[in-house]
Image (cartoon, rainbow, N blue to C red; front, side, top):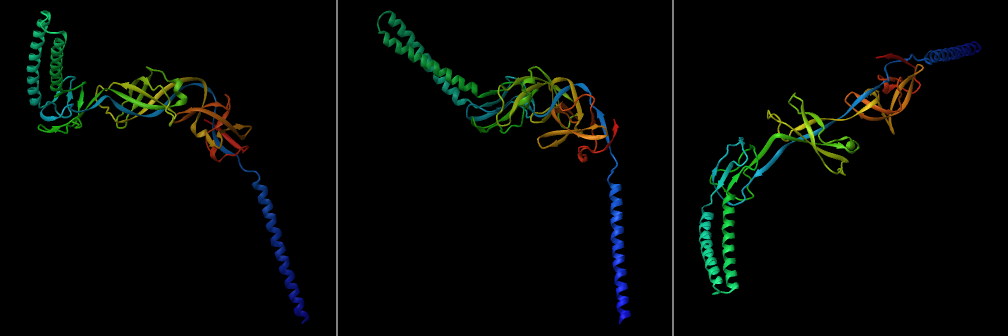
Length: 352
């Protein structure tokens, strides 16, 4: 039994010694690993040197192309259409007859009114002669004169109604698809077709209110439309006199020539609006800007370490952002890997 107890005791001591040895070795390896991990290699980043330059400030906006003039052609009088004098989709000139409404009844009324007018005119003439001979009173003459003027006005009214049966183009332009046929009974609520003037065209768009002071009438803008490679120019000719309170924007309208007829009303336009040129501006690539709570920041190189700097921006293009404060000329601005950088991180800078 003693030998058994001695054997078990030796075995237990051996196990304890082995456990202590393994724990000690693992702790030693962890300490060595920590010693090696304390010094991380510097992060490689690309950078540029901040410099001042004249920046041509411009806004890229969405606009809409509108017809110079556009109406829905309707008749002012009701009646049967007896003639259509235009071809769908064709160009019509100002004053050209578009369609004619039957005016037989109106002409009969005009003949009747002319007869009444002639009779009233003769009665007025006779009354005037009698008044001169003092055969009738002034009141009787005034009644005859009033009857004549009333008949005259009635005749003019019917002539005006007859004139309205011939509908003419109020301006030159392209007329669209008609919705009537000869023999159709139309009323003033019936839309016959659309007449659109497409040369020149208007371009309407809105800008943020902070740029309102930079906009001037007669300034030139450029615009493009989807599906056409050509870049078009237009001239600002009208500015809304007030800011739209719901959107805090100012509406502007420009006019452009459309000699080749490729531009169509209703098309979206990509507008490039030039603003004032900013002198001695610091411009950085957009990828260098990091949005943070309360503003924007960039990283600059400072003695081999990344330094976080809060900046203020003015405007931006697709590639660049104008910095108004936070940077000075000569700063080394980091432009790659900035999203994973931390303040005071070790860096290895490569200038571009």
